[in-house]
Image 1 (cartoon, helix red, strand yellow):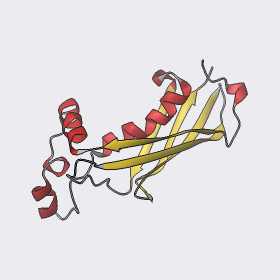
Image 2 (cartoon, rainbow, N blue to C red):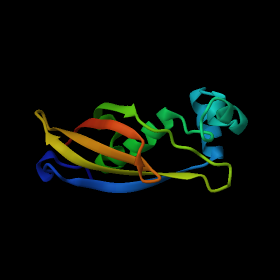
Image 3 (cartoon, one colour):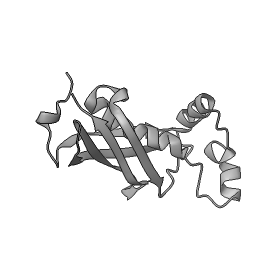
Length: 140
């Protein structure tokens, strides 16, 4: 069932999601994206360049976050614009458990032509990992 523009208002909250990420997830993403930078899979290298541990790809984090919006609207093609600033890395320990990215979102503005602005909040360990995370979505 499509979300109707007439059914939403500023402040409408989208269902929150949690996204687990493990080292295996990062290797799979590297294969899909072609981004094999060792900071995303090699702990020794990550530490040598000053990182606290292996970190998730920024684009992976960004992609997981927008899933809150695409799941809500039911159509990935309804997302017209999407942008973020990468503010903090998501570290992923090699402990078989990994990390969890928490994402919440809400309608921030009603725009013309049945579009809305959705502001997202993505956190890891209680700290924001994406800044200025916003999507413009066309609703039914």
